[in-house]
Image (cartoon, rainbow, N blue to C red; front, side, top):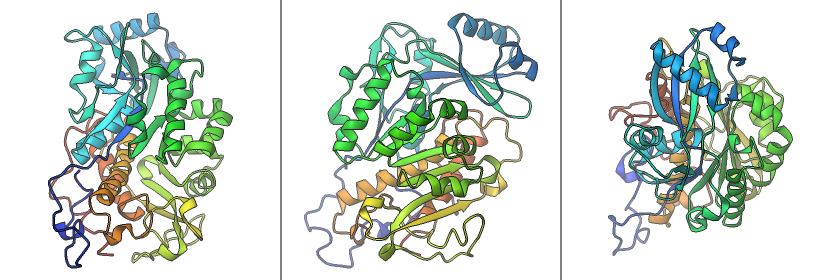
Length: 432
């Protein structure tokens, strides 16, 4: 496990206090921390289009819709013939997040779902595997008949994304194929709201089974919302599921508005904390927000300037590490916000995957906390239960930086880790 950011080794395994680490401790032993996620494996086909093109196929700008296979084939052939295809990448919200997580942590993650039984060189399933980190464990994918799904990402000249989904066999992952022990021992279970689109599908039943297993084993359940239209259509069901099962909720500002009813990300985060323990909201060119809980006795005051928006002095305790509300005797809601790294890229051609990248950074920090607790249980880092290894302020910096790396490229997936000279991540919880 590679720890988030640039830190000094003494902060990992301090040796000044006797008895903290056994004399026979093997520093080379491997921890078992990993993230598991259920997804509909897709290949993203990015196409440059005009507003007229979207109107021709009745696609609402900025939203996601299902496409009949015949229409999907027609679009693909048209795009190929007119050289409109920018790239073809392995996709899926959960698949993107797990890939980025494994690139950042240099450690294992596990992807669950279905994939074509017969894979040939050059087909969609082949491209999916080739564009996925070797650290992502694909051994638990269910082999099925049929082709891999396609997610067409239509990019208009203003950089806005619209999606058309050709399902293929993406929903054929069945509950009986779910490896229960893999879910039960994970650091977190990652799900996406896209799994709720059709509750008659097998993959939805598998996701509900996985959520039950995670809940019984106290494994944090992470839900990333789909598009705002899906959130609106499935609002009551999603709200019930979030209230009963979800620990961490991730969304962009449009999805936050659809889910909470608030335009303001701070108020949306405050509202969502009545249902979950941690909320991540990405706001495009305005950066991102993180909202969480901490026990009053463990709250740490910020050393930065206090800021007031819709919530007065909202960042007062942003140097605190996140906790589950149920772990707090006197829970306090805490918030942090960060503007885009370096003001954001000079020109953003595609925002696809930026939110998934931010979530992968948060999951990396959570898994690091599990790993460190397993390796050094007597560390003062674990004198009480925390969800994260770092403060929410530090996680904002990290998530912001990872998002930037995705925004400056065309692929929704990281091709490498962060630069070794990264300076914005040098501060640590301990140095604060």
